[in-house]
Image 1 (cartoon, rainbow, N blue to C red):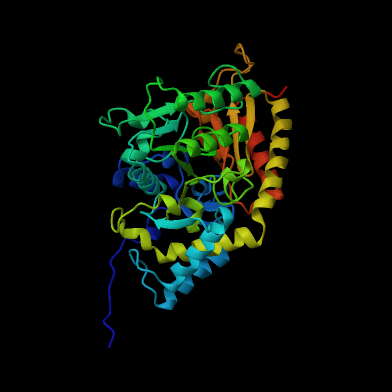
Image 2 (tube, one colour):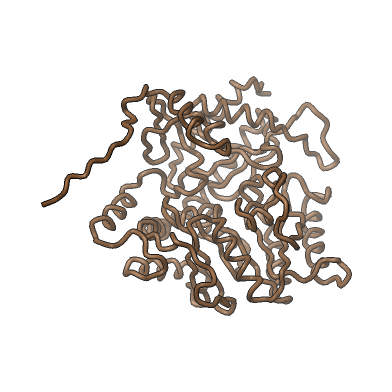
Length: 460
């Protein structure tokens, strides 16, 4: 005889079905740390593909996609089926680091996607967020080298946990947080529009490349040889800045020569987002440690390191995490990875990125507040500027974070969800589902132009 289980819960349908009610209750329930509801004030009722519907039945084109987590969009039927298959299979939902046939299949498939089909790599499952994986990577680099320093880059974002925040460029969340991880040295990261050295163009990239190599080689640089260099091959939160190929190749060469562990953070840029399976592939390099999360779990929490085997210096149990055995995420991740590979999604995304940047360049001619369009694949940044003010010596206009925020608001009011990033939030960022169609991208362009007009921006 089965016991009848009664679950008393709030029936959300009994509440007034409007965004304001749910947002007010969220403000009552949750900490001030919540951020997205302040910029995107809606309560989501359902989602499908690239579309989100709120409780008032308003529809939005979602070009955020869980900050790039939903590589196949919302509620992809094969992803949903993979969840149902696990639920009916009898598998436990979490297994710590005990293996299962599902974990075995996921591991083999993920390894096959790494450089050289993963023959030189092993996997480490960490806690479920990208920041958890970054923490593990930093610890491992220190353990394997016996050194303690880390070089990171201005504009980089690696997470909000203590060590990950220490190697993150954004100063705002570091305020009043004392005792950050010591011996973190920041260096300038190339920016196609705003060269951090004030040089610009190819000369700026060459100077930055020399600067990095000289810092490592100079016996009086004041910086001890680090355990690791950590970077994103395309900075996301920092304003969608792709690393120049020459610069990234030289960093790989120098780190190899000096026995420095190169950690590439592919949490946001990985898994076909930039038109390659991994963003570092644009430079033809192989990292020592690859940090993976977001899309690797197919929309569910999962984080994994790809570690070159010679750097796997862990002793058993020296880095753990309760939820590193998330079977549902391995199922949704496996389904997502297979679709990305089998359907050649990276090639589709690469072509769409070129097409979309061309369309945005045409829009830029009519709306000079669009100072710069950059990115790779479906990881695109639109920097908003003040074209009526004086240019700097490199021909760049001042950034306009206030207009960028207003444009995000007007986009939302017009049924378009975008995120912002970069210095002072001046860059509007596109991270839509990788399955978005050109027709849907045309809808994005129409909504974005309407938002420009609604913000009072006059075309020329």
